[in-house]
Amino acid sequence: MNEMILLGIMVAISIGMIAYALMPRKSEEEHERLLRRMSGRRAHQDAEAGPGSPRVSTARQVLEHVAPYAMKPVMPKSAEEMSNLRERLAQAGLRRETAVRYFLASKTLLGIMLAITAVIVCWSKGHTPKQVIGYLTMAGGVGFMLPNIWLMIAVSQRQTKIRNGLPDSLDLLVVSVESGLALDASLQRVGDEMHNVHGDLSEELRITTLETQMGVPRTEALENMARRCGLEEMQALVAVVSQAEKFGTSVAKALRTQADTLRVKRRQKAEERAQKTTVKLMLPLILFIFPSIFVVLVGPAAMKIMEAFKCGKLG
Image (spheres, rainbow, N blue to C red):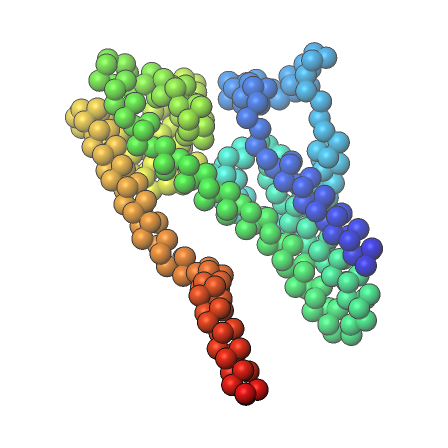
């Protein structure tokens, strides 16, 4: 029993280490490194920082040594699969060069650790070899799929945050454009102003601004932002802005129309979630609340009936 507890603690620590390595950092140092990479400087400048530079954690050092070997069995077989994986990680907010390495390594490590745990548990309980192989395969498959499930949840949560922040950001963007600012300057201003409110959307706008400052065409930079977000609303916004610039129509009016449309969609989604609440409450009501009410209301009457029945029998 103690061995099982120890193994569970080791698995939990390993999962925490991998999650910590994949977790995006929002510190000033991380933003500065992002700006330096996008401005064309080399990554080794970070290593040449002074004594005040942040130290690398022990968990990350261990993962950096193990990851190159652990990622080989699950390495994508084509450049297209690798590109899709990088795009999915970018949609989750993981743009670091080591994100792909840590993600692929986590699949192998979790699969091996859960498989070993399953073998030890089955051996301690005296299962047959067939059962051991079955549990080993199932545990290894679960460990292999856990990073994919985590990535799917992370992408969904980030997309929800960006979707909820789009109408407010578009309102501020309309005000900036109508006040006389150019579209690039308006995007930069909105990205700076929305940093504390909608951090993920602000980060995407800042990256788009940096790309345009580096010479990337505005349409291409906006398309890259839509690809990084992976939202239909963002793709529609980019299409509206591109068409407005192409045909010479008012960008402010197009943005205002798009903001109104997104606000209506957000309200409709909120109403949809509110309507689903009654259905979701049925299960806890039936399992937990109704039995308690039944005991409180019917219990005293049932006890009196039982007492009267006993008295009648005794009499």
